[in-house]
Length: 211
Image (tube, rainbow, N blue to C red):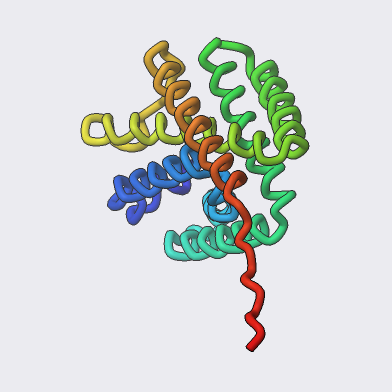
């Protein structure tokens, strides 16, 4: 994001931003379904922040851009939490579109082909998650969290050497194993947790004793 690179406050605290993103990745990957409203809220916060900041570049004032971006993030986050079916659809579309686009770019597809694949993956992934409910939400959040953790890990490992704006994540065999392993581990943990909650007996009310 050019506007983000130009803000000194973000450059000064970039490592803090990356660590916060890593924590969000952990929540998504290993507790996404259990914390679904939180996931949607944080996703909306980030989406609104970057979208609002990109538009706020017209202000030509770093402080004003940060304010507009923060307000946009808060509004979008609250909207996605309040309208969860829309938040679920948008979040799932973003996860699968980003994954498909990354694969297409690393495979050196043309821009048009990469965009077409990302759009198809976004629509198909969002519809499948939306229709499958709990299982789809677990799969989407595990994949989304794993990809985010892979990106933030790469940023942290190269931050001091190259700076935050020069890192570019590729699908190397090692990274594919890293992302795949994290995603599978996240799915297993989330499915086990959801099954345990489903198997818990409902609390029974003790009838009042007659004196």
